[in-house]
Length: 353
Ligand code: ADP
Ligand code: MG
Image 1 (cartoon, rainbow, N blue to C red):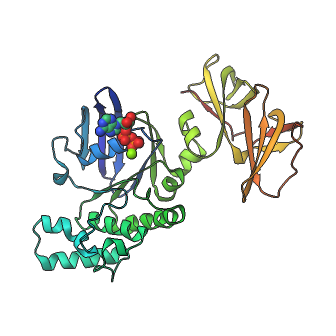
Image 2 (image 1 turned 180 degrees about the horizontal axis):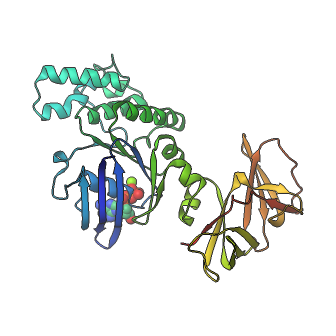
Image 3 (image 1 turned 180 degrees about the vertical axis):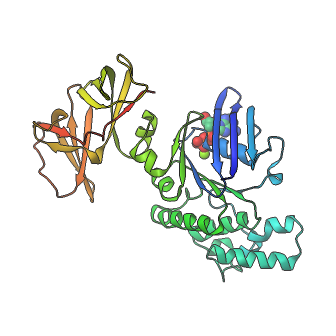
């Protein structure tokens, strides 16, 4: 397995702002890697530092094992796709796509060949003579992709590439991006704050917040088995209960939360007295009988969301837990009624951050 990108203790300060704070990330050649996290977390800075548009304050960027920290963007094996719609409005689609090749002084017949092939790859064959304003938003974004890919760099950097598209188009384009990456086989590094987008395209996802890499894994790993409290709060719909560990024994930890005591599978770093958080995905929580209950509370309300309905339940300290069920299944209690909640033994996860 070869490594496309490696950052070592990468730090970037803008004046007093620490945009990146010691990021170590390793990205394999040929994988679709997503940087996911809240706005202001440092995703764009990380991407642009990899691409050479920012100089690190300290630390290193290695591309294919070579330290490129002193190289400008055009000397790196990286191409960049920006948010829509950074096309030249007066040029045709073909001229836009061929722009970088003309700068590189390629003979015009070779440019024409490469452009035609690339337009076909991104599904725009026949549209080369149009102007950008004669294209839909999704088509314009494909022109951008073609313009970056035609340069034959083997790492493509995409910063919120779908952010300007409306919701339905974003979903379609998302899958297209995934298929395009499979087709061209180069490394894609895609920045987004949207978890569904991240999960659709990614081979692996890195959670980025506060200038740090919080956690990384496949979509399934970060969704189903988040290790860090932040990951649980950002990916999926998790109930989060903060408290303190009151006992650890036989692989089971008990956490005293404001809503009551919760027993769950322990982790290596758990110790009695430590602050901890418990996360439980809302779709794994069910309204149950008193005998089966892991925790009890008072029914607040139901929220109908079409495919699913959320039951909201208040705990002793006023915090709420959500149980998400397929709409039309089970009964809906009256507001104020005492209710019980249960979940599978391994659904609750312990976090010590
Ligand atoms: P993200 O892409 O995750 O939203 P950014 O990398 O854009 O995050 O920003 C990380 C932090 O750095 C933020 O606090 C942002 O305000 C700050 N920042 C980004 N670019 C600059 C800049 N050119 N000058 C000063 N501060 C910046
Ligand atoms: Mg950004």
